[in-house]
Length: 165
Image 1: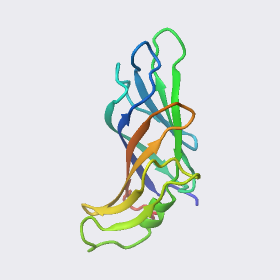
Image 2 (image 1 turned 180 degrees about the vertical axis):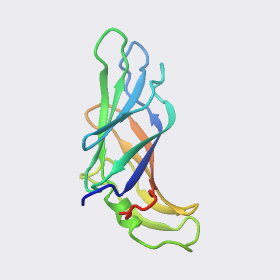
Image 3 (image 1 turned 90 degrees about the vertical axis):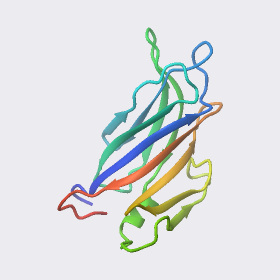
């Protein structure tokens, strides 16, 4: 798997019932890591149900690499507190990219991914054909924390001249 295959846009939609790390709330932000790449969202002040609706884009050369998501509470004077983490892979998403879906009806479900011990899904995740592209919505249950979920969406961006996945 040499060379760049395309770009993966991860939309960080929102956090739900995140842990309180300050007096009555938290100032959360999300850090995503894939291989050597590290991206982060803006900080949302005093909100345990933040709405980021922010797109972070990875260059993908190996679709087998897992993506690590960690939420932190921003602190001004001390080290930022961890508010849980999750991990997800893009295997099912990458498999769907290899199919020729042109002409499929809007909203066609390509794959369903069930929550299990090996993933951090809070509920079933579907890879669907939407507006001429493949998207996957995920609700991730955070690990190593007392509560919290994060909703994200994956979307593929083909590069001109790239070989796709």
